[in-house]
Image 1 (cartoon, helix red, strand yellow):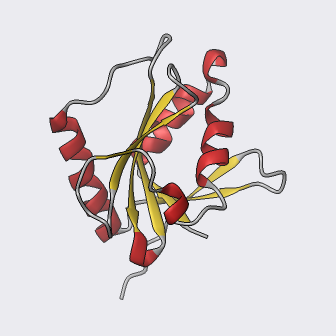
Image 2 (cartoon, rainbow, N blue to C red; image 1 turned 30 degrees about the horizontal axis):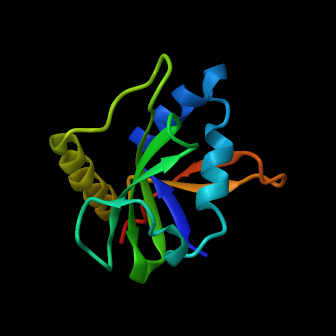
Length: 140
């Protein structure tokens, strides 16, 4: 199974979205799509780069008016990095990101991977709630 991580940007947006009643399905959508999957299971969506080893993907979850999630998969490391999420409709809804924002996220995720400034995602015992554990950088 793939290891799931996220940027702080993702966690902040996820917490904000999840707190709104109209977006209550966000956590279930993420659990159903990302958890207990292989990297091959997760390579669907719009590729924002042309890499086979490290695809940068924009994925629609929850149907047409649902959510957009941007993520990077490092296939050789069996790791997936959730970078950003936003709803398409409703009070927090927004259109697709512009190219500058996508480039900024890509640069930022690479920096966060290098510095280990990430959260590891896991599920609680019921497999209905996501836990975010801040990575602690090991000094060598």
